[in-house]
Structure formats: C-alpha cells, structure tokens
Length: 254
Image (cartoon, rainbow, N blue to C red; front, side, top):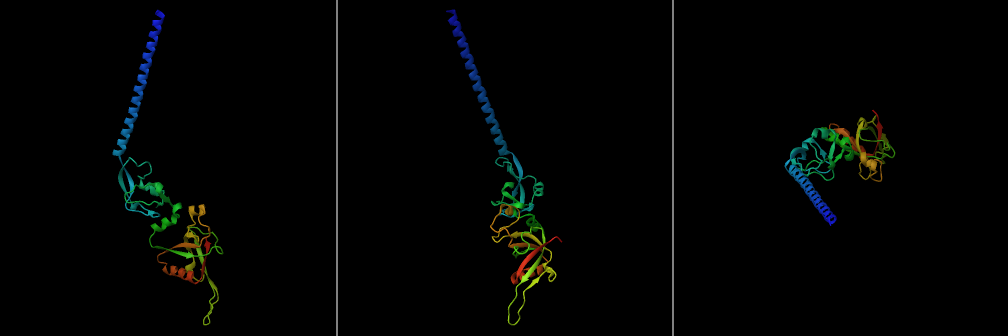
C-alpha cells in the first residue's frame, strides 16, 4: 500500500513539474513574440519618423534624357519604403557617370533610383554626354555605304576623311564625267569626328546594341559627325555632297 501511495506521489510531482515546464515554455514564447513584435513596431515607427536627405527629380524627365546635377534637388524623405536604391552623394554619383534617364522616365519629386537609369554604354556612349556638355557644336548625319569603303572600321571618337563620288552627268549642253572629290580637292572633307553610327533600321551600333546584335544589318548606313558651330560651310558642303553623290569614309589616325 505504501508503495502504491509513493508511486502516486511521484506521478503527481512529475505532472506538476511538467505543468510548470509547459507554463514556462508558454511564458518564454509569449515574451519572445512580444519582444519581436515590439522591436518590429519600434523599427516601423523609426522608419516612419526618421528622415534622410536624398536626390529627387526637380521636374519631369523623359526616357533617354541626359541626367545633370541641375536637374536634381536634394529633399528629405521618410526612411520607410526607400529601400537601398537612392542617392545621397551627388558628386560621387556623377563621378561614376555619365547617366541617362531610363525607359520609365522620372516624375517631378520622384526619388532618384539608380536602377531606373541607363549608363553611357547603354545609352549611346560617352560622346552623347560630351555633346550635351560642350557648347557651340553641331551634329550632322551623313548617309553612306561602308560595304565598299571603311567596312565596320568606324567607332565613336574616330577621325575620318570623306571621299565623295559624283556620278557622270549626261547633258547636251554641259556633260560632266564622273569624278571623286577628296580632302586634297576640298579641305572640308578632312578630319571629321565620328560620334555615332546606325544601320539601315536606324539602330545605333555602338556599345550594348552591337554586342546584342540588334537589327539585321550591322554595317553602318548613317554616320553622325560632330563639328564646331562655326563650321557651317563644312556642314553645307557635306549636305551638298550627300545630295549630289555618294560619300565614303576613310578612317585616319591623324
């Protein structure tokens, strides 16, 4: 009998101990959930209240537009919802440029998100940035056929000489034989600066577009040249030659 009573006492003590342990586990779990919830609430409140100064768009900007410091303004924004994609140091940011507005564009007051921008390689190269920053320059696009002249040996930043083939003109009053005009005959055709090239589909062939093989024809059909604004006579000569004959480019290392 005593043995049975002792066994009951042991089981009772074990049950009480188990109950206490379960209670402690529940309490600890509750305290853990409370601590995590409290921390999350505090972090949420901190992010809602804490402000950080970031770069924002001064006005609406369209896809492809060159991004310059004057188009941005620093503004305070709540940390909540910002994530990590924003800019605080404009000097450092533009040292990594040039940058162009991406396909989505930017609205006035939008936070500047680097992932929504395009780099120079994606937007046509550094010469586009150079043109936007330089004063008193002009662009002229010249139609050509590089199958019979420079092939694909043209790229932004290269100097070329132009050669013009003018076909014969059959006229009863004043017939003219075909002729070729080069830099020796017309100095306006010497030392032209190439900054872009496009194929017959109008696709730029520099940088990423060339690597991806956009367009069926990868040989340039239009070459864009950059000239000083004072070279108006040179620009007129290129237009005249493009209308009267066919222009070919010969790359030069001078």
